[in-house]
Amino acid sequence: MKYSKLILFVFLVTILVSSCKQHQEARRPVSQKSGTFMKKSVERNKKLIAGEEGQIDSLIKSNPKVKYFASTKGYWYTYVVQNTLDTITPKKGDVAFFDYEVKDLKGNVIYSELELKPQTYAIDKQNIMTGLREGIKLMHKNEKVIFLFPSHIAYGYHGDDKKIGANQPLLCTVTLHNFLSEAAFKKEIQLRATTTTAEKQDPNNIEPAKQTKPVNKSKDTLTN
Image (cartoon, rainbow, N blue to C red; front, side, top):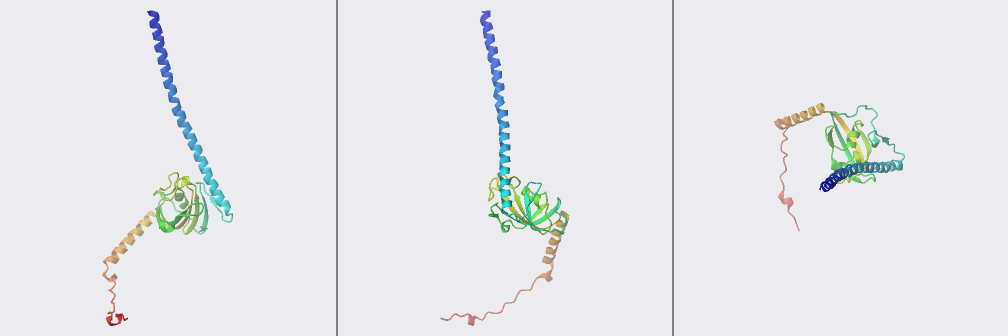
């Protein structure tokens, strides 16, 4: 009887140890799988960036007469119109006024200047494309610059849910017309509002109604 109890005890202990061991081993693949996924994701992103940079490099080399500069922020740019007289560039706390156009690397227009309309942008305080945000800060007034942006500083793997696809590098042509401090911009808006109100309230600004000459109906009669 004691022998039977001993066998039963050993059997139960064996099952318990085996169950704990299986439970511990069952948790390992989760962390291993997660780590593998992250490694594959990093490798995939590296290949994607390398591929896009290869496309950009080919575009630059296809026209050696155009001098492109490599930015430390991960994009390339060239001047269409350069302002060498000014030294000041936009910074946080300024408001920039610019136009831009978006193309793919083959030169096909995705968004024209007309579609995008003149832009008013508070530097580093509004949510715009990363590459564009950084690119504007190196420009001077009245400059026109072509930027080549890899997708990771453009619209990434989401695109813009409209015309720009996933992982699409972009060619953006930007014209910076002017920029000024937020304080100066607010004063300008207030001045415009005050001027508009004064014009509406000043009766001397009301133009007299234009007099029309009476119509000679006898001359307007159609003849067969």
